[in-house]
Image (cartoon, rainbow, N blue to C red; front, side, top):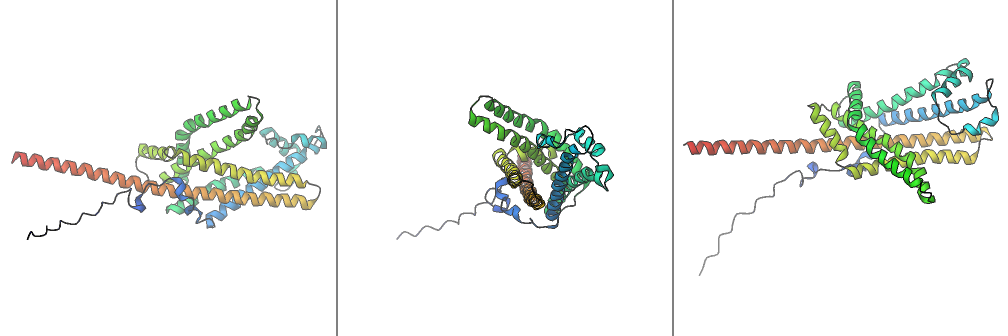
Length: 333
């Protein structure tokens, strides 16, 4: 009787790689949407919301004082000029007239309001940087904040400017066709694309400063990784940038639209409008903090994956070198 064949050795376990092991799996920005919700009520998140709300209220008050100043000094066109100037941008000439002729310099701290608003904006940027540094476990330093901003201009201004400039040109071309739907698309999309460009530049800044703050070695390596982290995920980053920009702009517009519908016939209506602006500003600041945390979490995972890949490549080159030396030694023997 034939004997049964000897069972072969069990198959070796499949080697784990960065593609099969979940902690080291490459992940895009979309995969951190839920994870970035955590930390939304941390110390730095509250500071970010407070700073942004203060900036919004101060700039609204400065604009209101600007409109009121048209009736406060000689040569002004009077109260009938207020509707004609509603919604225009606050220019440097307007600020000068506001401070010199609007009567604010005669009030306690009146002329300091634009400066306070600017300081609140700096507070927004700094608290966001501290939030990212705290999320990744290192100390936020002013040097990395400024150098990251310089990196963002060097790496992102030209390529992002070209892409968003082409989109703006396409929207303008569609608006000039005379088709009503395309005209509305151009009317809504052009300012949205401009705001999205600023958001994309901020994203490049966040990636650059985080890489510097974590101690990335080598300037070219730092530039290369910071650039690729943005441009290797164009669809995911574009959807997050455009979606976040549209949502934040929509909330601010909703507050203005409700205030417009309410009117300003009484003090209570004006106070309600300010409350709506405050709520919209706080929500927008929370969304900004969520985007900052998402960027930091994506950077941490991408850095981990890239370092593991680099170690595997170095180990492979070392193994090939050792094998070639052993073969050479055997041939000599």
